[in-house]
Image (tube, rainbow, N blue to C red; front, side, top):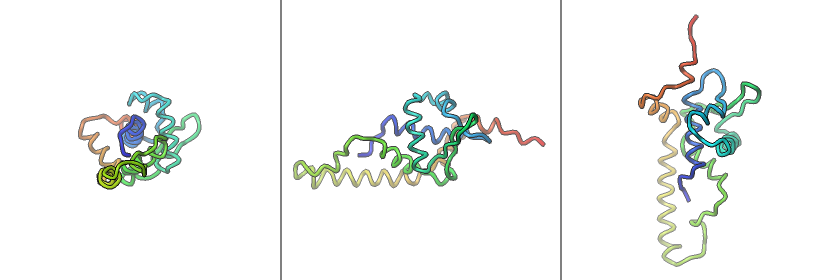
Length: 151
């Protein structure tokens, strides 16, 4: 069942933070924690799952951190949601074959249809679009201000 959990919210915010605040160096998890107030235990779990799902790339070393695995216009919110759903261990009640006839034949199919509509919508929202909204909202990108193009 599609629901907005803390892990889901933190994962979306983390990918957006990396996309919006990245500069020449990878974004370190402590910087994401500072900017987003995400507890580190949730953050590291989410970041590792996003690396396994090829949404992020983990960069090792003292100046390591995280980068996007592909262009931000090629990462949808749906991609992130699917990655986090693989982490969540609660059973999906929509997949339960037990229950009343109305529940199994009417309510659950309706809910699955609505869930598909939501996922289609999320698949059409990219990290690039959210970065543009962040810019429009006047949020200052720490990565851009650290880039220096002086010759």
